[in-house]
Length: 335
Image: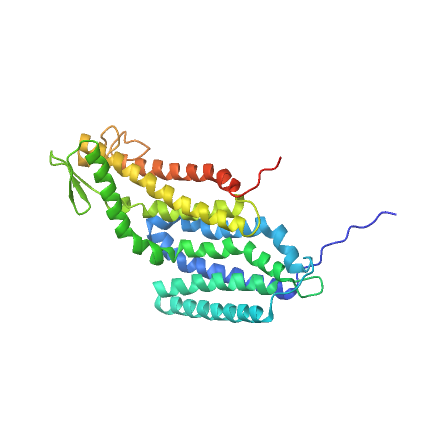
């Protein structure tokens, strides 16, 4: 007599309804942040956020679904006060999201609406994961609740990078980052024997040639994109349990930001040397000296754009190389 394999229990209806609500909230957050992605060249990576968020959910579904169906191990539940606090914070985040959505619909795009929608979405997703977890007899263990929350950390938190990052980090660090890049580039040029005069964010050579370190050269574009990529790679490929995996993912994100800044400084040093040798306008031409639109203009773009693309690609390669190294941190080698 052959045994029929037991089928996994279906997801509870309230969990399915909650999932539908979260998908609708993600759709509204996409609509809100689309205005940033379509108008801010630094944030075109945002178009990938809904796709990557859903992909990570799909990739983790095999681990998440048992926690929502009640297939998780038995154990003591989280304290009642913690469950009450989680429910209260989740409700407040839902109210924040609703107010942000209403403000977005009435007044249009704005910092307050975007912050409210993004942080409200993140809070509701994490709170829902913590509260919706199930155990064999209905009540889950505290460990099950935290595991469910951890699995939704990237799909929920990545919405902060694609929108609010512009207001919370970008606008705050762009000026200081621009000044730092200018000083470092000037210092390297002086160390190489060049006589450089710094006027604000403009470097002037003795022959009168000037090179401006513009806001686009501050590195904020590669910084925001690398933080996004670092978070995504960490969510997929960083191994281990809590808290080791979380610490390694944070380290990878910090390394992503550092790689973006360092490679951008290298890019600006190269462009400044090139402009000093070929003239300040040469970086807006291709290597053959042709301007955009001229016949024979290089498909690689101008010297300025090519240097930026190489720096960005280099930062991504550095991140890929760092993943196996980060995975080894704090791990005991098996013999």
